[in-house]
Length: 300
Ligand SMILES: [Zn+2]
Image (cartoon, rainbow, N blue to C red):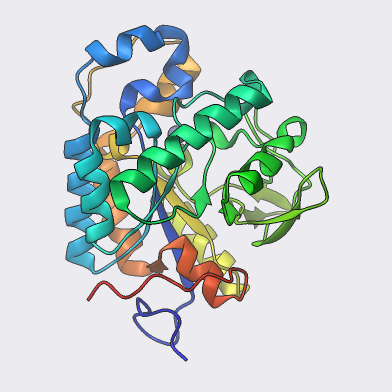
């Protein structure tokens, strides 16, 4: 049985490579300075940045999972098809990048169904995975897991088991497995697995942490997770490899989180792709017996 056709060798543990496909102006940290009405008049850079990521992954022979925002899928359905045709898994990042705890359950249901429909129409295949804007599945929004089950999702990857001002369930499991929704039904969760330093959880698996921390710390943290026999989900956004993106005037903390080391990110990404083994999230969960659905077919 070879459920992971992407495995480069038996010695390396296979992690999930993921991309949250959104543009720089969708980011929650910049939202106070960017009205949603302005999105359609801003320069869109998500298509070319995602294409760049696709080329980079192709060079490295890595396949991953692309959680695509419905707003992006509506404007660039051909991009969704190109992601799928390149052997990657297409999954759902919601429609409008609203934080779940700023939505009512009815709006969350409507938006998530709309995004899933747009992706499945573009792709012609069911979409199984979901990731919330800014990991906004928190203790007060666990009801969202029931919505995901109702809409036919097989897994979620939105829970960050750390403390943070915007997200996090500090005592949530840090390993992939079933999570129980308020109704009692279960969904598979692939949380953002942290490393551990002096008994403290340290997030090292992507995004701003990847850009802000020195690379040696990321590498050590990811090696520690794999050394314990655990897989991690690495995540990145197309705008993080775009140092030339328009600058938006925001407060110091958001500026630090969004703009630090954009020019170093692509080189670091090449290192991560060379030093760790990756597959789409669906394949990693399938290989661990957590998803009944068959892993994605090999891209070759
Ligand atoms: Zn996002």
